[in-house]
Image (cartoon, rainbow, N blue to C red):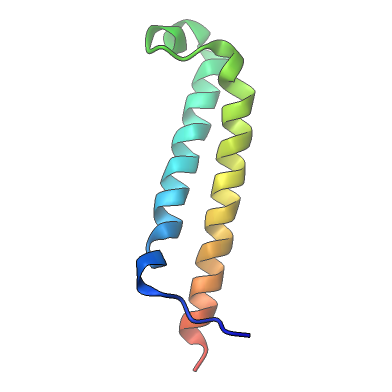
Length: 75
């Protein structure tokens, strides 16, 4: 199995982790403070979908990071 990580994907896990974190924060804002979320244009009904998308994105980022770190250690 080829575990070589190409250069363009080197920091992709970090971008995905940041996007997932942002989705989680916005989802929690929509659930906990719907008035504040509405003030920035975020409907309260988007709370749970944003939390789920954020959790999936952060999990995917963790898997990419683990794959990259294993590939870097493989001679």
